[in-house]
Length: 248
Image 1 (cartoon, rainbow, N blue to C red):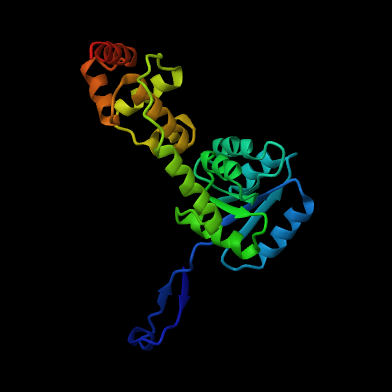
Image 2: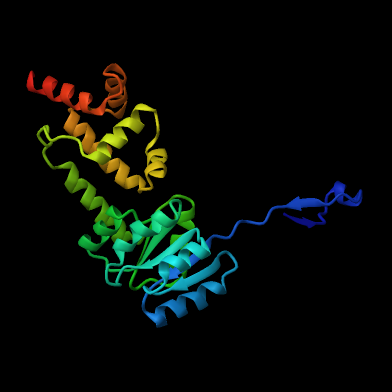
């Protein structure tokens, strides 16, 4: 909080008015290209709306991010295994937002970034202002991207909706799915499950989708109901659901 005098009646009575400063997102730049790393740090450090708290290459990124504790990581996905780093970053900081930079605006790369849970996209032709817009959007829980990227994502969603429904699966639940079934029965949300298991929200959603398919159920609430009915045993839920499907 900052105390400032204001031109209102209370100011004349010697009572200062409190004005809250906006919170500045803490940024971390992760790329093995030194010129890009130093250029982004220099450009973003001049912006009063954000705070650059660190940068790193692939050699020390884990310890550097753990020490800096940023709100947003700018991740260069052109690095070898760049997108694969997103998962261990979230293990270190589960709530961190990750914005992909230097993204090629082609469907495969855009979809891969989306599946990895990126909170924003900045193309290879993007500017420092594009980076700032993506950061602000990520902090608000919004995905800011170019019209081209948005069109590719919408096209991908449309293509997925046209796929025929998959046949019910009789595969057994995995160990992780058993864990998630137990947490679903306790009424936990996807976000709470992700925090408890130290995995991404998107990963939980994928597991829930797989569980529903394997158990031949339509809604997550039905999973919890089955667990309660069968004595909180996920293996019993799977057996009962498979038997029900076989009898249809």
